[in-house]
Length: 157
Image (cartoon, rainbow, N blue to C red; front, top):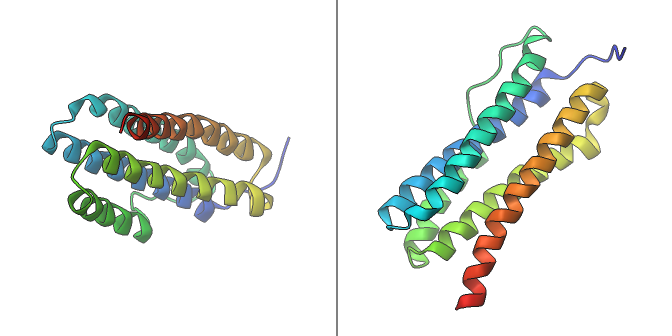
């Protein structure tokens, strides 16, 4: 049995990046709808659900440490969503710009998870490290799907 205590602040940071991802994909859904490219809605909704699941999996580990799970986002996520709205508007209001913005969001998500696993794992129990690694693996599939959709546009141009 691993007796290491988990750092609830670190786990809450992961919850925040998931909240950012949810908000980012909600913004992307709205933008896709306004641009009449509703075929992306299913993908965006799938990744909203994925982050909601990730939060559900992370929450008990914060509570177990006597802390409350956060419902906030990171400031960088708020800035990213603002940038997404501006970029899509300025860059042509098109599918490619929207997918590029989503891929940047997936990159930020991946980078935070990797940083915690590579640099801060000593503050987490082995089961929580495995959970984070599993979530990262599932997110990388999402990243690759968004990238493939974006690349398909680039090759058809």
